[in-house]
Length: 188
Image (cartoon, rainbow, N blue to C red; front, top):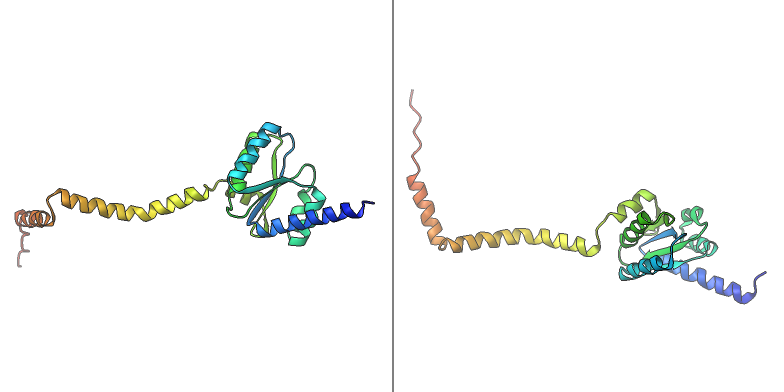
């Protein structure tokens, strides 16, 4: 039987994992088997740069933390080597990085995940992994807002380049005067 101090340490770890699961908006459980130190270092660096917290966890402790926060559906995959990746700020970062990594490394596998406190299936995880980063999405939205403004600015510049509004109105009047008059319909 473990000593009282070991039990207290394990309770503290479970409490920390529970808080991490509760406070994060998304998380993935992965099997990191067969990963070498160099690749692991690169992976951890990329995850850190994207504000994803990644750590190796014991299955029994993560299982208890999942019970505390209502993520019991993750428990069936908690076997073998297990690491937990969580994000407090971006929904797709962990999925994008870890699924991309799993494509290149045969033994590295994404086991399960959750989103806003609910366990998600692998199809959802794969869909998340295909989303661009938050910065790219914001740039796309900004570009969509700027397009009408840029078109208007180009139209105004074209008017200025032609010699101003008066010149455009004079051109329009001249074009109207030169246009052949429509023939009146014949009376029967």
